[in-house]
Image (cartoon, rainbow over all chains, first blue to last red; front, side, top):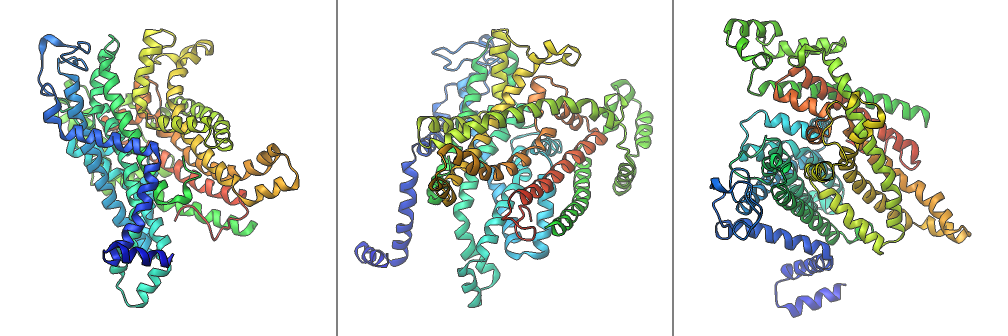
Length: 304
Length: 327
């Protein structure tokens, strides 16, 4: 193994650190690419995010333009996915809603991970009273069913995209914090930490430059899986009317709006937004699972 | 073993008390922060236009007291078993209200949980024993799909397809409690399908991975080399060990029975605790919200301790001082 590394160091022509890094990165990427489902998930996500970014270019009508003569029309060449009961083009709203839902999920996960990693790391690393306080608080929040917590938190504000992101972020961090804490606890006991401490590294330095990079893998996997959940949560909140408000489309509130017309046979109002949510959540789950397998091959035979 | 465990259990249960108090404080503060006046929500618009009446009602409910005083009053009542009276919902005592809705939710969630486990077990085991086969791949993909489908979407689709277009099943459940069971079962079908699907997906995945881990262990090969047939090995040795983490997983899902299905209950107009919670939060009905949160919170905490307890009992490798899932 050492000989292999030496050969690569000499033939690569790069400095030793980057050579070591690339030797470690390649197997991960290779393992990930071998997982066809995970790659499919990645492709779908890239497509959806690309669509969200290209929204001004690929939509056919403004998402809030009402076309009074065209209420609840079936899909046609003009309106690829039909129109809703206010006469708005479903396809354009779907893409715009994708922008909204995907951005909301992403932002919410940023909040969840920031709070979760900070508190989880503090709890895991410092232990003692800090750990007890943080963990008790986490336990309390985790004992409330998430949907109830979300609805309660949402009732504190006038619902909008911003408050929805905030609500999801602030309600969901306990799960992430727990996980990160476990990671830090585990890594704290490892040799490299003892070594760092023995040469006098300060606690913050140990946390930041030693433990944190080693937890990065788990954090990324968790973030991916949480993204899928966050999108589902935003859709649920918007469906209940507590999230993004009409006329701003979100996949969730499109389902709520289309519900009334469903009994009259307007299937396109329910099928497309729901399909969008489903595919996005599925893709993130597949990708997250694939990442997890690629980063830790010991799990490969048991995970699904 | 006896002494250590009982002391541990007592300690764990005692620890719950500060947790529950903490929960009550968090929820109390949270809902009082919400804008909106419960006194206003209680009344008809005509009554509300009378400012003196409004003020009087707020006085009567104690809403003008400083927050800590309100909290202590509520807590004091709680400790004597008085959960208060609902602000809206016809001034019913909260316990009665919860009692009415309790069975509705528990029935639905309980059946879904039970069916989920029932179907997931053989599916997971089958998938594990035939790893990488068509069956296994199908199960894997199926479980991903099952967990990714938004449940309210599925509910709407099933409602429209099976309920309206085919007319096979009733769509919403108003009045179902009064019908005889021969008719009543129909109302259960759609919500149970929607709730059971993710359960099957979740438990099957767990069963599969748990089973796979057990199969790889040395003691399985040892059992085979003793001369035991493959099926006996599987059931006598493999299954028992695979069950251990499953018990934890199932146990942790149990508290969901009480609170989880807010959206489904709304879609099917199912009179349960989820719908109650949703309505109560919207109406700022503090006594109801607090009571529901305390009950679900207590249930979750107690079940967590019990699950740890069962785990220690069932797995002789885990010791009381060493391994516990929380803290």
